[in-house]
Length: 391
Image (cartoon, rainbow, N blue to C red):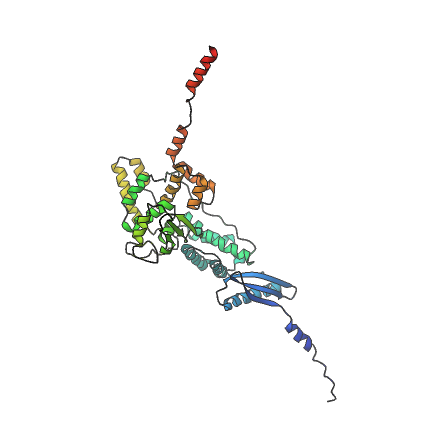
């Protein structure tokens, strides 16, 4: 050899340089979640991505890497075949569960939704698919179907925010029929209801009556979420209809019931069934105290019938546990509390909802307010004043 350098193989050095070029996506932990971060170089352009994977940072990195690889493959597919990157409904649902703090009932509902739509890409879900799901639940109450649709909408909305779909498909919600029935139980009726309730359910009814909470919020209440310090009595509801944790002041009336229900336990649920077991999580929610409530209601109806209040007894015979929530708001309104106070106490979303739903349930208070107007009170004064003018 004469010491001269051999020419590099055609393209050899340039290939090495291209391999050393920076690019591609990496996983980073930002604000408590795994994100994909970097620039993805495609055949016709470069895509700069800064996107949360919806996976908490305490999850193993290999989960984030698997999600990163899938998204990277989808962008490559888009570049080659013109298909927009997406993700399965199951993947987005997992991201939603890890992003928010859903209640136990919402988790069960999301599992059913995954069984229905799990393998579908969220970009491919259309209104007809959702309508078919609603049709399969024709035997369910409209309020229950709407709760499923609330969870579905939240998951699809997250899919849109993560860039897996352009928009949430429009779908019709079943209308809940509103019947004009006075669902406000008087204080005397509430006392009779509590008196006729079995010991294991009396505390649940008392808690619902003084906080306006729903059945599921009451039966899943944990001992760790109860504060019984004098002057600071309070409960914290976590498994709520809207998946929002909130606290509620605890009226002294319900305290003895809760203390009795807790007994000597230090943890776990406050309330147990008559068999001393925790209430089961139900996919559709509700129904946990149906039988026990019927027994208490029958005692109330019997008392009203014996008192000769037959018309009222016929109405109360149709009462459900949810009437306690109606009664809570109605009694607050009857004693003159502001709509804002009632909204905060029961976690109602709008003032209009409170006014339209509960203002007519306190007829006695309305009657007293109307009768207090000073019609005719100045008649004598006006007559005397007219007489002085003529004189």
